[in-house]
Image (cartoon, rainbow, N blue to C red; front, side):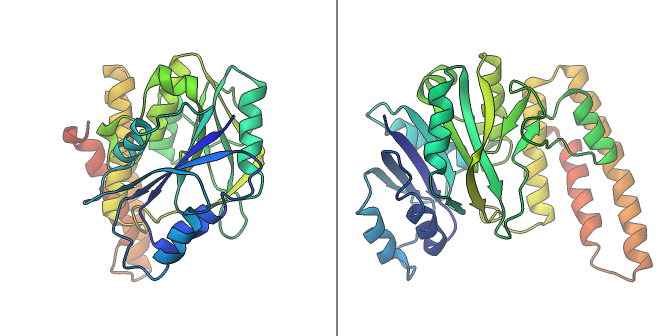
Length: 302
């Protein structure tokens, strides 16, 4: 049994090195597919990266001439896998896998053949937990989130395993599940909500999704698309509305978009009044809510 790990290098060689280094001594046989989504060869840590990978079983190393999206990169790596793995691990480069985490996730899939995907417990660089298990942005939870800002992330073990999706910052998938549902939907590129769609397709095919608390991964976050900005918000909510357009009924999509329009306008006005009262003139929060509003109104994002 071995796990095939796919890592996309989209940040810096230093961050990628830390990620690859953490794959050593995981207690399970690993094959590695590495994608350079940006040119890292001029980075001071590139020599260290090459030295490190020489100690691992690297089955493919793709060097993109131009950046590609999350889905396209992972699909390209999947297409290059010639030897069937037991499990495939999709892993962001801005992560550090704690010792034994991959072994723990593989154990979960081995022990229960009904489980198609498993994620770790994800923490930030401060050691605090990050949201990584979510209810789908459909139905009543989507309306509550849109209108009142109620998030639909959940604590591990507090929802049925066929009602949640897992973050693809670190996501292990059974090979049989991949063969059944296929790869990521590239219409979500350059990123956001492709993992929501990926997990939803697994659910539709009857697979269970669970989190393994014994497996811990540190996630820096914000490295692929940068810090909070209207452009990043517009991109992330474009992904959300593409998911809704793909899976909700027409009346359901209309209701969810309308709820986001109402909720965004309300929060935008409240934020504007607060920023004016505080004498702020950058209107940073107001602009973020405005980006969500534009995404909700745009049919080009569906």
